Length: 354
Ligand code: HEC
Ligand code: HEC
Image (cartoon, rainbow, N blue to C red; front, side, top):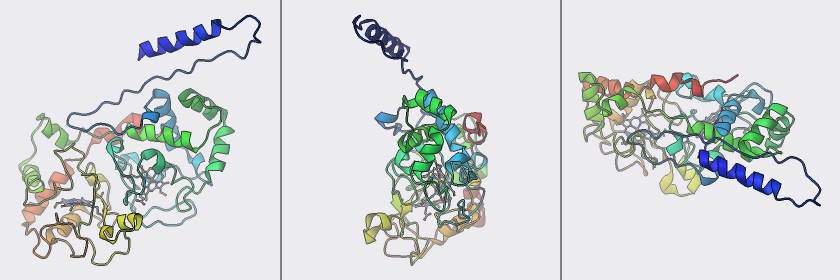
């Protein structure tokens, strides 16, 4: 990469010195050079899903971090992305069921955790956005979130000499618009990797789990609990299969989920499988935050779920239930708690830079 820089600089110098004498000298050429940000892929994780036109740079990530925490991106300067995505709770919304926008309006979905987004294939509970860059365009103008038109956001940023300079350094642009903001924030969010929980240390054979956690692991990862089909550990350690399923919450759907996006009734009541990493920190649970505790979640699965037209074939115990004993339920919860990653929630690189 250093070589790239040198090559680029020499090209600029060559170009500058090759000008003919009779040409009017223009303004001095400032070479555009960024420093690559080397994102480390943890053992067992899949390939990053980074678009070719938004490779990570030190400048882009630092700028994205600033924007993520800047209340200037909301209509009345009271809310930033971090208001609903708090690092100490794995970037969820402070235990609330539904988030409140700047005007006091309340949404209908639970704020998602932002963990290992660099590997995701779909964004939002219904997967309506295909990339992190396109996802980020939504919350700023959304009236129940930050409620600021992008034209106004761009105006604010273009009037700020500090941001002008930071965007110039990161993207070589003189006029900032929403695409640059989305690119920078996406770069920052891609650096938020959680791969050092107790479970990860166990998978790397660095530590042992307690007998209760181990039993929970077995229930999770065998036909007994049947969790692993959707919250997949082996294929990439993301604790999600990145697919849409109906996990048997309702007989009648008030939120059609994936079905509202595809228009296909076979998708009604399906939602994106969430990662279970840091799950002990991200209550309440499910797309509508209906369960306050992990114990309630385990009760739901233990019941076998509610039958409906679209319930997933992998919910194999509808009607009969899993019939776990109280000890087994406690073990499963103990296992879920092993996915907490203290390093992730206290990593200074992800914290508020202001
Ligand atoms: C008012 C609260 C609120 C604010 C402010 C907010 N979000 Fe969110 N965020 C949510 C909610 C709620 C969802 C789930 C929405 C849905 O699925 O329809 C979400 C979902 C997401 C997702 C999808 C995660 C996944 O697993 O697919 C990303 C990424 C995200 N937000 C990033 C951001 C960024 C970046 C900002 C700032 C530009 C931001 N959010 C501002 C509440 C908020
Ligand atoms: C058929 C696929 C499937 C199976 C099997 C499955 N899950 Fe889920 N799980 C999902 C989906 C999809 C959601 C989100 C559903 C929603 O919000 O509507 C979810 C949500 C969750 C949540 C809440 C996550 C959050 O961020 O709110 C937890 C915890 C959970 N599952 C644990 C388990 C456990 C434990 C098992 C095994 C007993 C299990 N799951 C089995 C697909 C599945």
